[in-house]
Length: 388
Image (cartoon, helix red, strand yellow):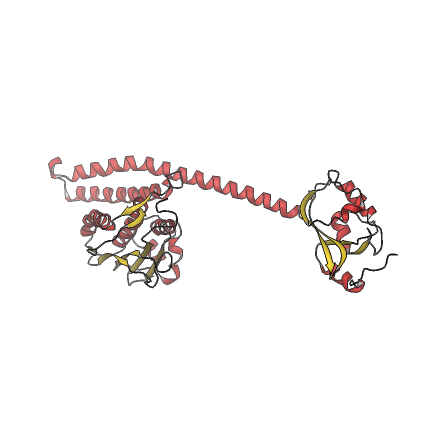
């Protein structure tokens, strides 16, 4: 039997190799086994081949060659190859092994080549199944988005017709209505308006997922956008007894943003604030640029940005739901209990827009004590949105 190479102690090496979960084989310079663990024979499927210290490595190579007909392991010399190499090998029995080999030295002495072998058949099968499931879920998500967008679009047309005729019936020029008739028309109008708003929410939410154009970032002045949103919301708020105010600075540096996404996010915040504020309450919208290094600023450290805050005197959000309400279709319990129509998509629209702009959103609220939502966006826009 060949003498053990200098620097390698058999009891120690055997203990180390047995502790390795992979199949391990150390082949010496003379083409004989220096050490091996039982896992090597099991993983490779060569039980019965002599793996004892000093045994020739040639029978091992021949046995492996029969399992790997497309790999040249016909000689023991291939087991002594000095090149570091990793590979995945498919066996004739359908299994797949991950194999690595590496020369092992002890000081100036070459001890041999260490082979490590692992059966990854189940792992690859799991990964293949996972990829199939991911593809299936992606297709389902796209189908859902397309269905929701198409359905919402189809609903909006008849609902708009119902709302139009409600307005015509309520117009004195169409003829006087009795008190009961006015109540009936108003009930129809409120119900149709709720459904129309829900269809609008679904349509906007899924338009992007169904294949809308990518974000178009460009410098803009947030002032006119906010002024228009507040002007559009004020009539509805006034009918509900809610006062809306807007606070804008005189000096407004530009903000690089996608105008449509920013408008949808701010409109969702404003709509929520008005909807959940009872008569006699107020909604305050503020916007201000923040200076370099402001605490909580979005974007790279020291970069300037814009902060938008929508504060209301509404029903508030329980603290335990502060994170959940940013998830699609999630509404706080007090919102579900009250006469507040909606789909639970508003804050998810805000979340997505903020992420697209590399910003941050912070919610301050307590049940019965109103809500304040702060959105911070870097003035230069997200990375890569500037000029090429």
